[in-house]
Length: 241
Image (cartoon, rainbow, N blue to C red; front, side, top):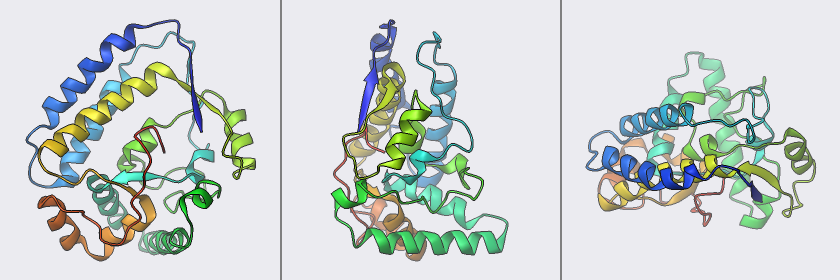
């Protein structure tokens, strides 16, 4: 579980609605390839996140190679799963690609045997996480991974060391959380208004379907139907990883 840190600045509150409205306008009426539309959405997110004011009081402690949160349950909407699936299939090293896709299937099979509480209490290494602790498809990582952060590596380690303790607390930056969530909600509302599937799916089980039935899952998405027929649909809100 997460808790937000208290910020001395409240300017982010006035900015949140503007961020939501701007992203809604940018995403409204988006048609064509859902993966390409998602890549544009990710680029807008990164530009906005990089321009966010930093008063030095709530600085994320995240760094390349720190991967405690890469063992948490991850949820993603269908269009982001498509984007990640394409990135994995385009990895240049055939052996690396085959090993990674095998890990995706292994994780999906494990998740299928777990209920939500057991999954949340299990430190399951993300299949996309490389041996050096970095994401193998960082540019295509889901928005939930982009939003997630921590102000304390020590707190992340403590939570990682006791995965069954669902009462652990990770301190987050309130401005970052609110603005990142506003950006996501603006995009999600545009997709909803366009009649697209906005369900949140467990990442590994959805990736399997996106890889095994790329045409069918995308056609269902385009018709506004559930994109995935067998993937685990999660009940988490937008704050959950």
